[in-house]
Image (tube, rainbow, N blue to C red; front, side, top):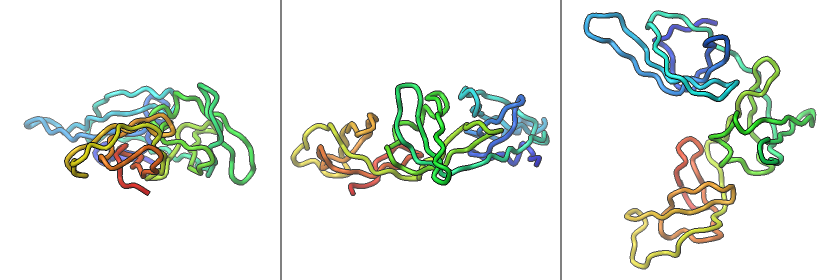
Length: 186
């Protein structure tokens, strides 16, 4: 299936230089009386490298259809993350370089979608929110309002996020996996 470059949107998967790439950002440019251009940021689903590229607005790209499977995250052993197919119980190993920016939201036993390109896992789709436990944060500042000041909190997966002053060690909080922002205490 072909798609015109002017119709690209973030999140689409297209073939570029013979490999599947995820469209990260799109900017439409019309410089004066010249032809329209589409400035994109693309991330290779095979190597994980991000590239900037300009397309003519009328250029056609191939939209890639990925196979998807529901899988359960089991554990990681340093550089590799292990998942189990929810239907066949087959295990799949995915390298850290493939899902590097998403590992902070992976919690053991969570179920998510793994996308395959030509039989190889190339990316994962996290749920829109994840609930994680606060393992380390500064004590609350007395008199600080909830919206006025934030503090850093380290979560059970190792990532740190800004949280309101009332959040304490041991609290469970909900995080938006797309933005990495605190949503609420659960």
